[in-house]
Figure 1: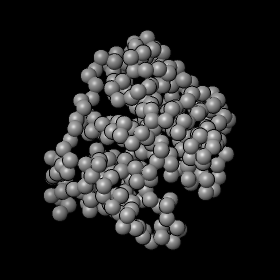
Figure 2: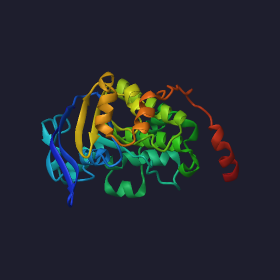
Figure 3: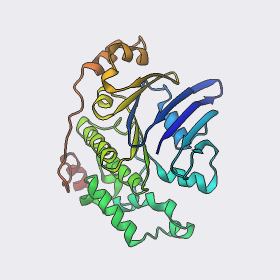
Length: 287
């Protein structure tokens, strides 16, 4: 599935959040988008998913509907199908706190259900099995019946990724998925996203704050500044001068620190891992 962004612009009144972007994303690429807060990264991903409508421009995809389709023109059932195939993971997880982990993941199957079955949360045995297998894949199977509000941030993000995966997407958009996580959990989440990209051939587009994380995990990096694309290239091409162009002259100490800091450690957590140590006290209070 090739995704083609053509002259894409989004304005909010007098503010231009995304300014005339044009680029292609080949099938199976892991693309990182970097830039300061307010650069337009989140607006770009929300336009791709059609949570926000562009002011002008086109988003073209050549696979979901067996022909090249302008995503910006989709409505009704076709728009719902696009959102099913273009799943999104958010910084704040967006789980239903009172529901258990399994039910939260099954929410990713609602677009496959008739309206009545969706309202009653009636899922097939096959869908439940898919959810269990997916939770195992993101190392959350031991917590399958646990309420989501008792999980750590890293655990909640893994559940959110599992919910996106049961949609059976072809594109996965991740909007700052590790911004609120500690380094260990951040590395685990990025490893999972890279595994999904490599093993399933799913295109992953990920907004990131940390330059070294983008260099470590992404095949290609786009740098944005004030809504414009300032850089588009491989991790090895992202040198100090290019970073200065993306982030500007202000905050050079912050830029230098991100360039020279050590990349997130790559952590392979054992499968069916137990409850994390920093959650044990919380579990004791709950039960």
